Amino acid sequence: MKKFRIPTSYTILFVLLLLVAAATWLVPAGEYDMVEGEPAAGSYHRVDPSPQGVGAVIEAPFAGFYDAVDVAMFILMVGGFLGVVMKTEAIDAGVAHVIRRLDGRERLLIPILMLFFGLGGTSFGMWEETMAFYPLLIPVFLAAGYDALVGIAVILLGAGVGVMCSTVNPFATGIAAGFAGISLGEGLLLRLVMLVLFEAAAIWFVMRYAAKIKKRAAPTGTGPAERPDAPPLTGKRKVVLVLFTLVFLVMIYSVIPFDDLGLPLPALGWWFSELSGLFLVGGLAIGLFYGMGEEDTIGAFVAGAADLIGVAFIIGISRGITVLMNDGRITGTILHWGETALTGAGHMAFVALVYLIYLPLSVLIPSSSGLATLSIPILAPLGDFAAVGKDLIVTAFQSANGLVNMVTPTAAVVMGALTVGRVSYPRWLRFVWKPLLAYLVLTLVLLAVAAVL
Image 1: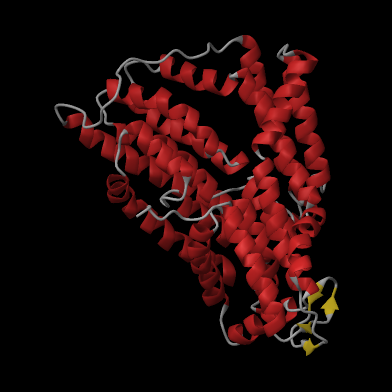
Image 2: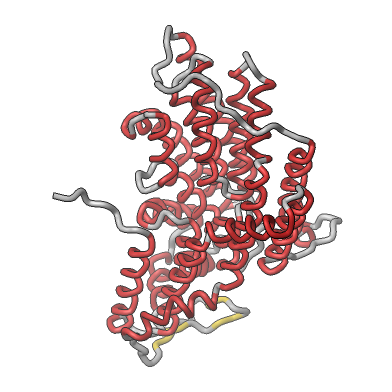
């Protein structure tokens, strides 16, 4: 008997398309009166049904892609930018340089590298990109007297917590905020607080475990003890790292609504089109500065964008589900059911429920981009009925999705990292369940506090 495998995100989304199409034949059609683009509470009314057939199912992903083309292009531009940066090997060189400078003081690598991966995760969703670092860092920690689990945790927990507390991650927070109709800067303070608290807790947890391993006579992990070759940190690569950081600093500044916050700084109000241009220019500038030439720069940019074409497809398919619901005129009815269920529910109960709902949804649809595109257009308006800010819906989504991605066997990064380190999946679960449970509880507490403030 063949071993059962969980279907890909594409298959799951196509099944959902079929289920939604079937629902348009069964669910009563209804709509809300719209006030400034938002559904007005209590204004739901029945309308003529508009059931969707096979043709509508086939056309829905294309309509969804057209509807979300700004988001898809933004993702491709970020991918191209990262493709050029990774081609320069500047990030690899920077990590290797830190390792060499701390020779004999490897314990300090734990907080330094976890902060590095955490900043990468929270800023640009550094997750799949971490796979290149496991063969580099696991031997380093083994040679220093630790086990493979320390090396895995430094990268996986460091980046994973950053992704979970995505402050400006374009692949999670950016897409979710876009479909929620809010600025990426809304809710930024809460996400920064979560990042500081959770990353500090992760560093303490890993260093505490590493200290216990260090006291033992021999490391429990297996693998080569030699340090692999790494690219040198040349002057050009240093400048690339500076430019890389500068691009993300500009992105962060450009999306913060300083005028709404009452701060005396000019608000740029950039969004997907402007940010796409930023990453396009940034990628081309880095490639040309590094001396890659026009052909190699364009090639690296296109290759980086191609690596994320699957994400763009998922966004189109996911958005197609929303299009199908809207065309079938059942979105209002589903919102009405949610409004009815939420009647009398307090702020804290609502935001906690949203967070808990996203935990199983993140197992079903591991792609943060796909899940945001699919669910935020439905759940964000429900927040209006419960008087909960849409930024909290976005934060609840990304926190749950990031938490699940650090442990679910459907995450290729998790299973790949464990394979490289020769650590079994049950052992990883035994190691990580306590901090993840603490993160779950603390996230619920922080979301509840933010909901009543």
